[in-house]
Length: 232
Ligand SMILES: C[S@@+](CC[C@H](N)C(=O)[O-])C[C@H]1O[C@@H](n2cnc3c(N)ncnc32)[C@H](O)[C@@H]1O
Image 1: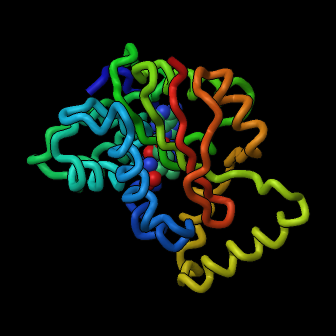
Image 2 (image 1 turned 60 degrees about the vertical axis):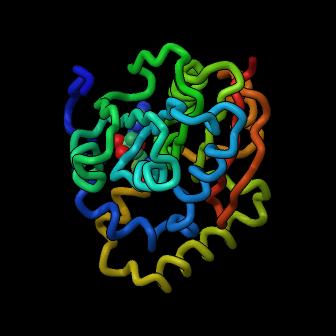
C-alpha cells in the first residue's frame, strides 16, 4: 500500500452499498468492465503477455475481476484513494489474485510511464473542471508508455442541449424500472457533486494531457466510453 492515507472520502462511506446499487443506477454498467478489458487486451501494447496494466479508481473491483478473468497474465496495479473501496476490492478478488494494491490518487502516484495500458471507469466525472480533470488526465497519460492505451468510461454532458431533458427523463425511467426507489440515499451520495463535460471539452483536455483524439467505443444514454492513446 502507498503511504498517502488521507481523510475518509465520500466513497469510503458508500463502498458497502455500491455494488448493490450501481447496476441499477447506470445503464450498461454490467457490461462496462468486460468491454473495457476486452478492448484493452486487444491493444498493440497491452496485448503482449505479462503487460503491466493500471486500474485507476478501482472502486469495489469490477474491472479487476474482469482483468484477472480475461488476462491472468497481466501484472495489475489497482489504485484508489478510498480505504473502504480498496478493502472491498481486495475481499472480492481474494488472496489468489496477485495485484499491486495502492491507496493513492492517480495524481499522487509516481508510475513513471511504465504501464502498457490503463482502465479508468467512472472516475473523471467526480473531479471539477478547474484544473483537477487536466491534472488527473495528465497523470494518467504519464503513467503510460508512449503508444499505451487508456479505456476511459465516464458520465458525459449530452452533446445536443435539446436532448438534455429527454436523456435525464430516460435515465430516471431506467433507474425506476430497475427498482432503485428504496436506495435513494445511496443514489444521492453517488450522483451528487458530479462534473460531467461535453465531448469537445473532453477532447481539448485529453489532447492537453498528452493523448491523441478520443475514439468513442461505448454509449448508454449519458455514459460514454472512449479509447485514448498516449502520443508517442
Ligand atoms: C464511482 S467509483 C467507480 C469505481 C469503479 N471503477 C467502478 O466502475 O465500479 C469512483 C472511484 O474513483 C476513486 N477516485 C476518486 N478520485 C480519484 C483519483 N483522483 N485517483 C484515483 N481514484 C480516484 C474513488 O475513490 C472511487 O472508488
